[in-house]
Image (cartoon, rainbow, N blue to C red; front, top):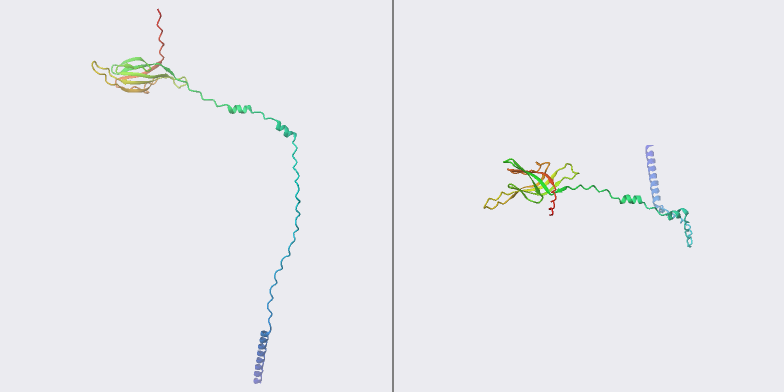
Length: 219
């Protein structure tokens, strides 16, 4: 029994192998169809666009000119009135500032000198431009003025030069003089610009105008 079963198994294996080999051989010998190529995409149908009708050339209609209205004609005929007041106000110039008043000039200065050693004082008149000697000093007044009414304080001022020149001794030449003072003297403030000298002192008293010379009486 065992031998029969083994023979039957072997026979079944042989039959199965032959069937498998025949199937494979049949598959190899069967002609294979080539793969079908994909169909090309269909082109879209052309869209027919209707041609637009072009307008036939012809003369253009002339533009109608607008009819002028009465208001426009009246406005055009009106002449603008000149702005006289505006022109006058623009033409006017600003007021100029008032000019300062001029100082009154005098022809004579009244000076006073002091000898510090002897305490002697002397008041004298010095005409403008004329040298006046007081001992060893020579005074020359260049200008003498009185302040204007619009100034802060009334005063008299004089521009004076002072030279020292000793007197010449008999039979000798006079020594050369030298200037010891030059500047403005103030009557109300004598210490503002004083003469500095070890022996003499001098200051301004006032300015005055010389009186006219009376004509000689006819015989």
